[in-house]
Image (cartoon, rainbow, N blue to C red; front, side):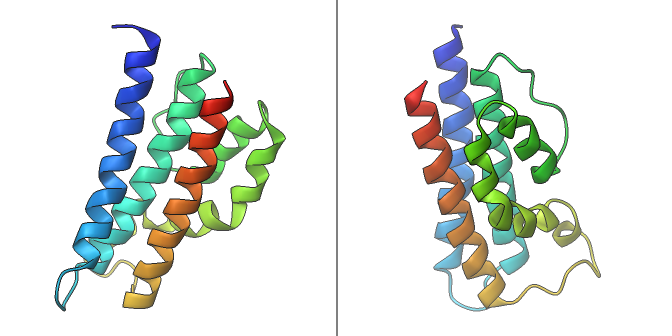
Length: 130
């Protein structure tokens, strides 16, 4: 499998996570807000890793979005604009999956989707430049 096919798999998985989050957000209450926020974090994580893969950098096995952003920033300093979004989304990597994790509201869920879309749009534009 070639590099472009593997890159497309990263993009497809990232998009699938975000589409799933958006779909779940349309469910009648109670919506699974924690799961939606987790999917938004996962989408952003995979988009960052897709960018690193495109740069011939093996994506590390981490859920820390700011760590991934810093790696991307070494290639393109424009990634720093994603700090607010990634800083918030990184909290949704682990805690929402366990009891007594984060207290996530419906508003938090809406913000997570918005932020994940910002990350998606930014990284897809960056990938298109390469």
